[in-house]
Length: 502
Image 1 (cartoon, rainbow, N blue to C red):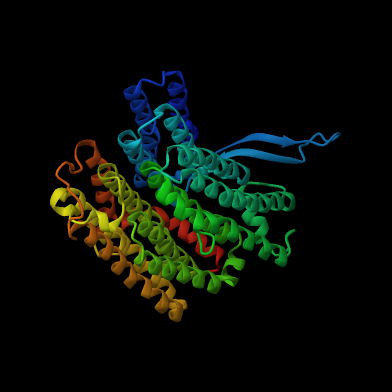
Image 2: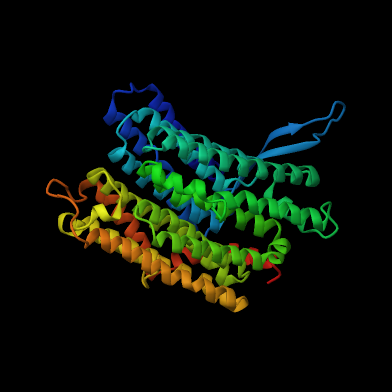
């Protein structure tokens, strides 16, 4: 295979599944589910092959592709005024997110096969389009291409929530669209200004031009563009107070969509802050680092305290996601290698843990038709496997040593304690609260007083065990052998630290 074609095949291979689905009658449920699942396997296989390529000591730049795509010509000009290239590439950080996306997408497809009850053809066509968008976001080396893939993720997510969600699905879908649409508008304005000022949309070239003190961008314009980027990606992450839409999505969307949303889509916000905020505007990021650290602590404490008082376990996990994204901000605000590495670890770790938790919640909801903590007491006796995995996932989320959550939280706080110990000390209260609200909720569900008759409830079994086991094994693997993440990140961290002057 031509190595330069690998990333294009990886990104667009789910489209083949959409074409096959379009030709299938909508009544053929088994065939549709089979195609929907199988179409997620090529990106998974290729992403793992890329990781193996890296482990073999070979360069990831072998897969970069850059070809002319869109050209703007003047009336009498022979040469194009502006050129936009089709550019895909991958570094260590992008590699981790691509592998995470491929794994969670495949496992979420299994959840969809089990828990989606209607119109499977439309569901999987939209789902595969979403997978293409996510893979494109993490491999785009061009601002215009990044924005197009970013927008591609919004459209199928809106319909997947609005059509296949629960009782207030339409409200959740429109809330998602409005907030993310506004964030996209701000992002587009930043991209257009950068394009007009630098004459290029190649991310690396933009970074070099913006970083040139004698370049076309003034200091005030750079600060304004960075603040705009911070706002745009704050919606996606999300950062308080731009978070309310996410709560509705996590409660109302179907389990497979929440796995994707919490596990992958929220991480686009973190990816954008690191790749564009810290990568293109390192001086402005450093200038506002204290503010970003405070926002991280607010996210951490706000999410933790509100998670503590929730009666719906889905809401507990939604506020938990807000809290854990605060740890990403805390790590980035440290502006040192330990903090940034901890933030990236948290991105991957939370993607796995949240996908596992929401899969388990979906399995429980399908059996009990509720996610209320008081109504799920006594689960351990009727469904011991589900209860055991739920407790293990909670332990990972609260940062139990030996699991991925511990590594990411430890490194993020270690980095911040070096530079802003007073902010880190306040934020550490959120770690304590995480243990309190998760143990309260999980123990209340598993070992609390039985609130209903579970005689007809079945434990998780068969194909349902595959996502649970895979995600749990990856969480433990990262916890006991963090090098699976740190090795690919070395070159990326060196580039970031050089940009920060470290």
